[in-house]
Length: 488
Image (cartoon, rainbow, N blue to C red):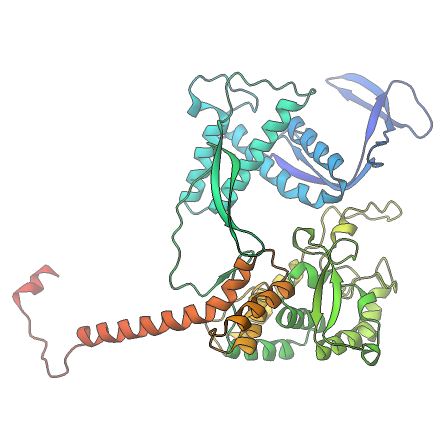
C-alpha cells in the first residue's frame, strides 16, 4: 500500500472568482508555468446575486497527494457553502470524511468514478464499506464514525450525479436505495412510526446495552456526578484558582448548559446590577440572533441562572481581569463581546456567527476556530489529577456537568419517590424546558435513572452476597491435596 499525503487545508478566506483573458479593474493576475509552458490570465471577483456572498471564511479544501484540489470534493463543498452560507462550520468534518475516503481510494488504487465492475462487492463504495467494518472490528473507529463517513461518501456521489460539471454517470450502481420503518417518540411522548430512506451501505453493528452503566444518553453518554464527587470537584477548582474555567463549571452544574453555550455567553447579558433584576432565576435568551450558540441552532430557549451565580458573573464581567482580556480582543468593550476570553483576548469557543464572518480588515486570519480545546486540556491535565488526590478513580468530561444538573434538580424536586403522578409530569415538563429537550423521552431518563440505579445496586449486592457465601473458603477446612489437582 502506498503512503499518501492527501489532506485537508483550510483557507482563511475563499473568494469566488472567474477566469478572464484580459485585465480589468480589481482583477488578480495569474502568471505561472505548467510543464514549461507559460500561462497567464486574470481572475475577476464573482458576485452571487441570490445569496449576496462571494467570500467564505475558513473554507476547507481536500487536496490530492500532489497538492492539487480533489475536484469532486471541492465542488461539493462549494455547493454546500453557497446553498447555506450560515453553516460553514459544518464543512470541516465533511471535508475530513472525504479526505479519509480519498486516502482509501489512493491506497487501494481506485478511481473515484470507476464503477465498471459487474461484481457489486468490487465497486469502490462496497469495498470502502468493508474497509470501514474492519476498522470498527479492530476498534480503530466507532460504528457511528463509520456510518458518518459512509453517509458522506454517498452524499458526494449523489451530488456528482446531479452536477453538470462532473458529468458522473456510473456504469453500475454505487449502492441500492431502500426504505426502512422506524418507531420513535414525538416531543410530547406519543409513539410514532415513519419511513426513512437508506441504502445497503449502512453499517450494522449490534450493540449490547450495559446493564451496569452509570450513564444517561442525552446527546451522548453522560455520567451524573455523586454529591461527594461534586464537593471534591468544586474544592479542586478552588485550589486550581482559574476564574474563567471555574465559572464555566459552575454554569454547567447550575444551569445544565452545554460547552458551546457556556463559552459563547456575551457580556451584554451580565451588565445589569443584581439589585435591578426583579425576579429570579435570571433568564438569558440563547440561540440564533443572540450570539450564544445552541445545539442544532435551537432557538427561543432560555438559560436559567440562579441569583448567586449571576452575581459572580456580574462581578467577573466588570473585573479588571476581564477588562484586560477584552482590551486585547477584536470587540474590546462592546457589550456584544464574549463574557469569557483568553489572556490573549481570544474566545475559548468561537461562535457560529463569528466563524462565518469574513473580517477583511484583520491582518492575521485564522484557519481554525477555537472550539473549547483549552477547557478540555485544563480538565485532563489539572482538574482530574487534583480530584484524584482524594478520589483515585474519578473521571468526567465537561458535558457530565449537564447530567449532574439534571439529577440534582430531580433529587431536589422529587426526592427518592416518583409516586405522585401529577408531580412526576410537572417535573418532566419543567426539566424538559430547562434542558431544552425536544422529546420528553430524553427527560424521563433523568427521572428513571435514580430508581434504576437504586434497584440495580440492591439486586447486585443481594445476589453477590449470596454467591460469596457459597464460594468463600471455610476457615475450619484444611487445604488437603487431592487427585483433581492433576488438572491444574
